[in-house]
Image 1 (cartoon, rainbow, N blue to C red):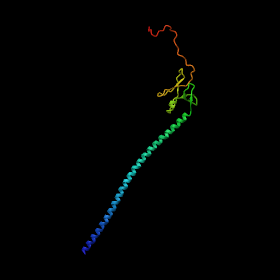
Image 2 (cartoon, rainbow, N blue to C red):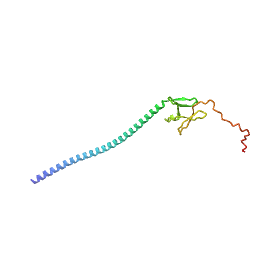
Image 3 (tube, rainbow, N blue to C red):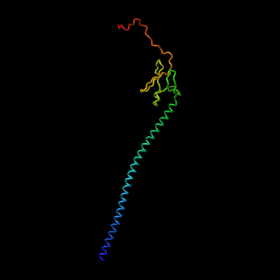
Image 4 (cartoon, rainbow, N blue to C red):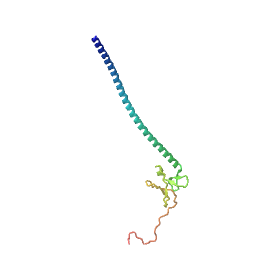
Amino acid sequence: MGTIKDIVDLSTQLANSVQDRKVSAELYKIQSLTLQLQAEQSDLHDKNVQLREALLDLRDENRQLKNELTNRDEWKNKLASYDLVTTEGGATVYKSKGEPTHYICPSCVSKREAQILQDCRDDLGNYQCPNHDCQTKYPVKLIEDPPLPTVNRGVRDYDPLNYR
């Protein structure tokens, strides 16, 4: 009877061993799937971080574009208070619609700047842009006959070659 018991014990151990191998194989499959899931989760996390960074970049760009649109609308509104005119002197400048009447530089308008032209108070009727990068002069006023330069006629014996 001891041998039968030994055979039964061995067969039970063998069955348990086979069972353990099946369980072990299943555990290996589960571990393998778990590692795959962890790798996929890590990839998804990386993609999520990239998408968040892209979202932040897009938000910044959106904010900048909104600011540019606001600035452009403000500029359009400001420029709407001027008309492009040709002055008596022949210059093409922007003239204010309201009071006080003034002119702004068309060169600076193209750069989205409103520089009020200053009267040069010269004999040519020029107005000049005060912007240091521009300083363009425009003949705004019409001067019919500019004054002729005066000639000193008081000295009759003037000889430019004789330096006495």
